[in-house]
Image (cartoon, rainbow, N blue to C red):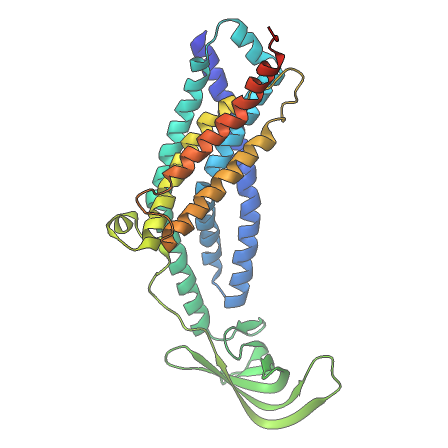
Length: 363
């Protein structure tokens, strides 16, 4: 009977965890896609890079979602078992607490092992790959010529939006539109044709317009200037590129182990803290999910969310304190795990103890 109950509990918890994690991942992916698409439109990323960037972003989000997903999955699964009196029937048949903990512990160990691999090895590689793709896509967008029939945006100082209707046989652009901001004023130029030149280092684009007009002024003001020209040169500076990946999150874990820099040591403790959070939250979720008679199945969800918010804020604050040297590096983030366990024990068991103390006979 114990094995059957264990498999049943494991199935319920696993299903709840997958559903909760999947929903949270979809929500984060929606925001991730919006940011990637906005950046791709601004810096002219190639189409094949966008999907890979979204996938790498999802891989980074999974490591953050796994602890909270497992916590809510256990609370929701056990909440349903308590609400439907299935847990009451199992306890009445003599099932001990250890029988309830072992399937949850087994799942927690497997998820923690996957999470440790993500945070310590695969996650930094994903960040490094993402940064490299962004740099390569930005570089490709900078060196790419202007395509007729498409708007082209150049960022950086003196950025501009360029549109050309067609391409002439001699390679020049026809019916060109250029809009940019210069010294707080908006400049709009239209020309019959134009030539696009790129500096050797890719930092400056030069647009030479022929036979056109330029409109210059401040939006909302009646003061505008119209200039007709035979030839007009517009230089556009683009952001400088760096090939080196310097983001701390992209540093391999083996390098962080050998480093003595406070910021890098803080990053190392952060990566270790995520798998530990997964174990701690899962073991706290079982007693946290206990429901009293007539309580709804979602009655403890808010308490689980509160515990996670306090836990994650303590870990994040500890990371900042280690990086600044306020907290001794030797303590790491272990104090946060101990503090959350003590807080959860008080929150879970104190109300019952207090109620029994009040109901005691005066004698």
